[in-house]
Length: 459
Image (cartoon, rainbow, N blue to C red; front, top):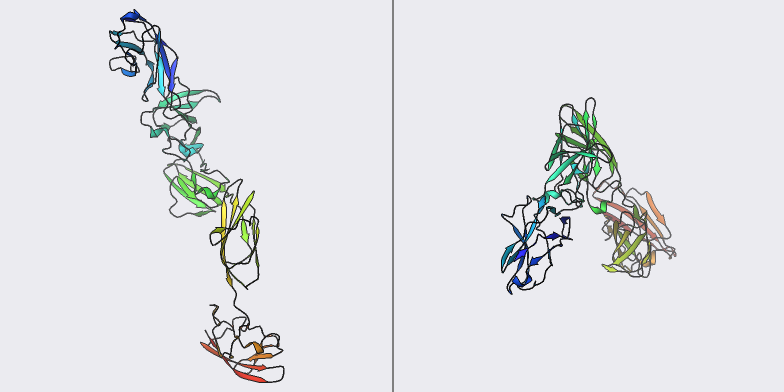
């Protein structure tokens, strides 16, 4: 059997995870020579066209190909990278081998997306007579698919010569720059088109004064703190010191600094025989909000408490909860609460920053201001624990009975007098110096009956 040189169904094989399907057509003669057990095999050479250690790409089922010409489909290996590959066709029964095909470029693009260098900082500087090191970020930012994660890849560095042209500089994962210019790097996929390239970095030489140290925020500026900490990055140097609002940040001495705050952040970079400095006015986009009530509230049974939240959020959504259960009909910034329990309200911004803020508050049952007590107490402890904080007397002496209540110091000075007692004395701090201070009371009813006694204030 004679097998003709295979005719490629492609000009170059630029494969990736999403596409790796190629074909070749060949003739063989005579057709009758192909035995029932015969298989056709597609072999691929190395990148120089040598078949000494050929790779088998495809093997047909025994006896499945009996007519000429025939077409076989195959995929290239994931380690393919070169410009001089060839394929050939072999048969097993009888044994025969074709000549090698024409040469073609073959690359498996294991990484085919843009990546970052220099921590995405667009500038760099070196002192006169020095140099600046450009490196591929690994792993870089969350959105950065660093090609350094794929050991089989190689890289070409370029320097721009015009807005549309560039010149090759060097091969490798990093580049030591000692000439001013704008640089970038591409993954080496030869003549195959690729999206695996870096951002541009402009490098300058500092001959006098200080260089500009550009600062970049990984979450942008303004940024959304709900996404987590933003990373501030600056140009490479020997040492660093970060500042916030002009004050040095302790231990912030790396090329990158993380924060979730707003403010003017600046950095000083030691480049060796010269220095660089820069700043950024970092702004948080999280909306402002407030609530009109304290964290703990007291409510009489049968009453309501109007709770209002305000927010500068874009397209806000309001969710109110009682005991971790969503109140389904409460969807505005105002809620009229009537039940006792633990509440929370979540304000969500659905445009822009897409952040959320939560306020928690509790509503407890208020104590009866006029409980039915049997005797006039002679001891109170106004310490804010809601127990015996005020002087509570029997109902026949309180508001609505036209009873005069008068309280005097131990020297006879009247400090409190009313005909409408609300069980609320003392309303303010008495500022007593003694551990236990004694006061005196005189209660005169509408029919001129009088009760007198003492009140001891226990701190």
